[in-house]
Length: 525
Image 1 (cartoon, rainbow, N blue to C red):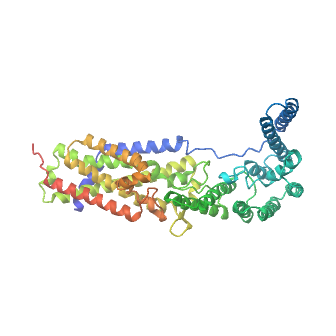
Image 2: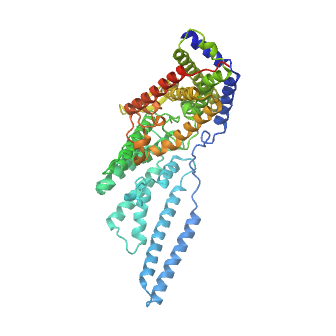
Image 3: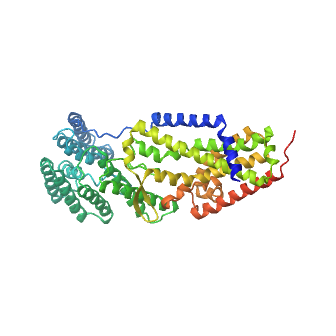
């Protein structure tokens, strides 16, 4: 058997076409790393330029003129339906309040120098964050803006619901914010913001309390991790942590949770844990993995590209697997060179198994070649320094973040994806045993792979369709999905189910290929 495998490997490695495929793979890897826009996305830069006060003042003047015109129209046309006028007047008053809030905030913002921590802190306020209908008009991290809004509503709105007590408290808090900003101590500012949010929480409704608690925790995390307001990776982590945490709170608050929602909760919880790990450990590098874009707008480095090798270049390995496994049977039958094997004292089943193993060894060598190439090309283009950080992942089994060497991860990823190429090899050999047309076998296999891996996979995510499509091999052959307790997005599919389906397909293809080849008549002419 070993001698047969060696002979088959020699035959494969003597083919010039294999080396052409590898050279093409090298060129594709270089081009993909160099030109792919997703790989070279610019880091999100926060604009700290002055806010345009004159434009805001112009808007306020226009709104005040509309209010004056509305009042005079109501007085002169009493016989007309006043409801529309009053509604329009109310809208204008709301616009006036909103514009005055923006103007007051702009004046405070322009009080500080560009690139100062104060501007970055106020930018966090200005950008805000809200999620869901329950607080679509109220962002809980905009404490300064909310205090200004309370003040302006009391001063400008004739129908205000704001009490004098609320007005006085808002003025006091706003002036205190200015004092801590002027003190030039970001920790003092953050501490005051936490205390202010706690006061707000004590007066808030039960619905609003959970969101205020979240904002308190986020600011406390910044303080405990000693992260000053600036435009860097750690501050981006905090913003991503805020967004993911809001989503997590929202999903958890749903009374009814379907399978999709439960999986979203698990995935979001994983991302929140990774972000918290990066913040607490002051990791200034993007820790995005094959499953998570931790910093969505950041430039991807060599380490991330290396981790995603099989995600990016899986199609190359599929093409190589299809090519060698088709050629190893059909070409030998067509050229009748297989007769040289059949006249030797080997069982046909042994011959075919040796060919299967030779194909598998070739694929493993190709995987190693592509990984090494990506490692070197990524390092040359993005810099090798990013490789100092290992693979940081989330284990869904333990609910904990872990770190391993990137090479160790890529080995695990490669081994868990190997079943994909084994099935492709078996399918091609099976097709080769029932027909001698090499081109047709290659094209048919590639079409089946593309359709099954894209269209059928997407259909399988629909619960009504998954009852049938979940039994397709392409939904079960990628065992990297289950690494570290991961799970499939397709309903009713888990590791045990995938192993069972994979075993059925493997046995059918393997035994059918052996049986057909053993009984196949080889033309001696």
